[in-house]
Image (cartoon, rainbow, N blue to C red; front, side):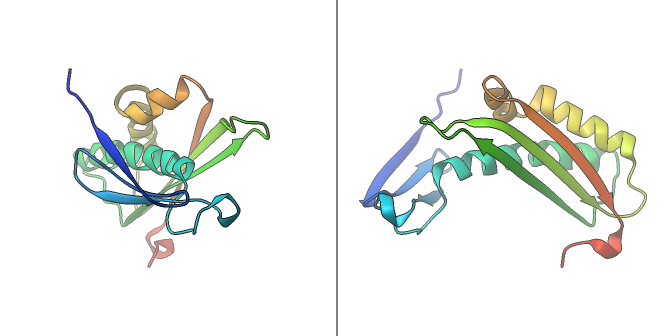
Length: 146
């Protein structure tokens, strides 16, 4: 079993820098009323970004193996949290947006299924405590992001 590590350093107030085993630093921060300076992402935002990055890291290679030509690709994650503390997520929705022509819905659905049920460890961690739904859209090349 591989050991994973992370470390965090205090900057000031509730501003922190952190890095994991890949040795890349991120900044975490919060609202000024809580001692933050809005210098970085909030920790819960990073959780949603991690989910998007994890599933995208599965879906894109799976579609490449199928010779799918994506002009562009996005993952949009939305979540609600409860009002009382701890303000945990009550639901999460992941929307995949594929840009390109001749993209097979069957292949897209299979890639999403494999990510959400087999490969994405962030999904596995989160779905143990919060419902996660997903949807997808396939847009033509001319609607691709610039």
